[in-house]
Amino acid sequence: MTTTRTASPPTTGLLLVAHGSSEDPAASLPVRRLGLELRASGRFAQVALGFWREWPGLRGALAGLSTDRAVVVPVFMAKGWFTTHVVPRELGLDVAGANRPGPPEVRVTRPIGASEAMSELVEAMALERLGEAASQAAVVVAGHGTARSPRSGDSVRQVVEALRHRGRFGSVEAAFLEQAPGLAEVVGALEADRVLVVPFLVADGPHRAIDMATAIGLPAHPDDQPIPVGARTMWLTPSVGTHQCIADLVIKLVTDAIGEPLAHNTTPRNPHTTQLLNTVMSDGLLGQVLLSRQGDTFDLRHMEDTAFPDTQLAEFTIDGLLETLRLDADGRYRPNPYAPDLRRGWVARLSDAAAAAEAVEVIYPGLLANLSRADVGAWVDTAARLGEPFVRALPADVERIAQARCTSACLCVRRWEYARTTASRAASSRSPSDTPACLEPCPIFLAALQHALTPSSPPPDHA
Ligand code: SF4
Image (cartoon, rainbow, N blue to C red; front, side, top):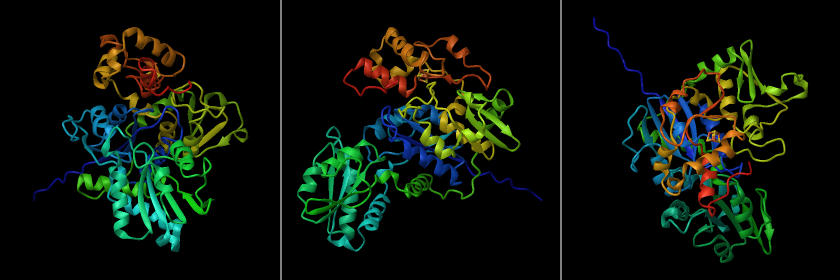
């Protein structure tokens, strides 16, 4: 009798890549929530997040995936410079999304905004609010757009075409913040008494709350409800990217990319749980938090709150950690999660090691993945990859920003140097419970250096 060995199916990791912001705490919140939801869905062996302007960067996030294949889903609303140039470059792919030595084998999907399911999602959002008035109402799908890229409005125009074709609304128009036709102009030309504007954006940041609201005559930060403006009723919905169906849309993009359905009950693997448990066994300190074991469960709190009785601490879920600890004690955004100003006064009780790893990841994104990495980068390699203006940075420029950003304003120990040196590589060997190591210039450092080299670029965060 012969026995046949069946190969186990390839494991699939998901990497959500997004822009993020060093100034707006709301910019990445829906993406981080989406990551938590997709991890909990049981459809992926691993879920990682990578950002252009926040921690962790795209390269570090991909390095943390140890699955057979990785599907990269750009959480952007349109194809543009980031999806066609920045994402492939940072992940070591060519523009077609190939040519990277695996593992994991990497596939890149279209951005969520260009998904075929997006028009159904926008239609559902509009019908839910307009009800029987839909056939008389005007719907405006409002994107960011940019005059620098004529194709940046394609996703919005595709959704508008699909909605017009289905004919559920009185009229459907496309409008933009930074390209023609402008939102105020489009809304001003409408004849309908009831106008619903759907922000075709990833997050509910200032573009929705201020730019779009004021362009259509609403006060800033309007609620999701009809508001009279003159003789009309205007309604500005939440941004499309915050909708609860985005997780299903991501799963559909992934299954289309791999050409097969995803399992329903995949046990999420966190290859870094061993490092986490080793840390707990030693001193339990990770950055400014203390993780301790209480039988089968784990307890996470600020290291300076160990003497406080639990009754004096606010108990947070993982989602609560995500929302609260992005701000400092004065309510200011902490774009660098490794800044030594983590607020105190909270405790999180975590049911098992996987939940503990998730909570640590929320507070210190990329930390656990970094513990097992030994590939220390050098500034010259980063600069060569990024091009202008970074290639103009002299060693003195890099050190000046590192003094301001890395030495006193960050808990990470900088391992990378300006040039490639054997010393920087040797420094990567460390015990798992060491202070967080910084293996390459992070997005926060890059934003600060870019601003120093090109003062007209967006200012870095307040820190
Ligand atoms: S040490 Fe510097 S480059 Fe590294 S994470 Fe901290 S701020 Fe960023």
